Length: 167
Image (cartoon, rainbow, N blue to C red):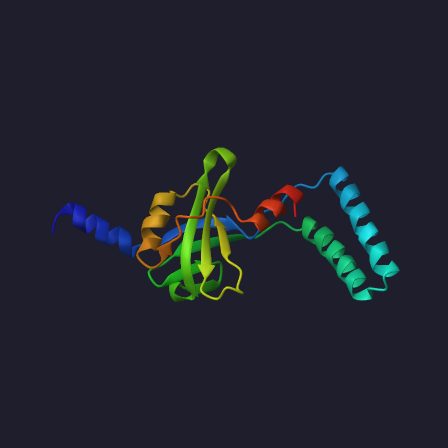
């Protein structure tokens, strides 16, 4: 067996690994809190005016969670692409749970994301930032187990809105 074949077989057996933040933390300035407070207060007044107390409760809980989460630093999780699935922190996901994957890689815009799409359309996709890891290495590994959606060229709308609104 040639050295090249031995090397490629060994690299297939070794898991691909990198670290990722549990969630993207945005810096919120004083003006963000003022605007968010005005919006929350306006929605709260509307909810009370229309006697929609459940909506009012949701607004209060959401405001509390945003302020509480802003005080916490996101955990750093290990992402490991193995031969039988993906390990993210302590959770393991088998490849057969996913229908496909896609990669959005635009380093000039600081976008380096891997998306794993579940077979169940109700389950939200998994989004992983791969920062310094080579996207071709990730793609080569995942193509052994999942099909790639080459049609996707932009980050999902929900992530774009979250980034713009700093949520």
